[in-house]
Length: 235
Image (cartoon, rainbow, N blue to C red):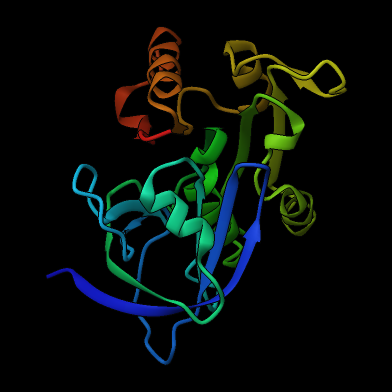
């Protein structure tokens, strides 16, 4: 049976020009979830066409004392309501749900993320770092511009905490960017993956990006059981 919660907003934050985050306090309640799972978030909106709930990945780790949700803000009633939430507001939740979860005993994991598809990866990577899991981790994170990088301040901190973590930003549309450029490709994956035949690959982002990367991994002869995907629709 899926549990239902009503939790208070304890912090709001503008992550990027179009991504908004909320932190929810546990309010004396506690529940277990696996890194990578999502919740159904319900807001008080009257939207006959799209409804008042959305599945949102949990971006916080089970090791943290809050729930973090981040979403790209659009003109829908739900997203506008999410954007306007204030400290003290209550949010209804159902979950946790989902099987796109961290395999804690893996030897090597390559995360391939784009845009707001980064949310479950923040959860998984933070958890792996806090639990000091013996797994080699690489995150290849693609965005249009440097200003689109979500949780920008956290990646360097997590890398410093964990010598087994490598975070690589690749930017597709920003002439001033001095780092890696272009979409995630075979050469990038091979550069940051030690054991291509045994590593696990997690892909999350817009459906077109997810399909493209999945097909790329198949052409690289990555075994299907080593590829895990989560598509973020509703951009």
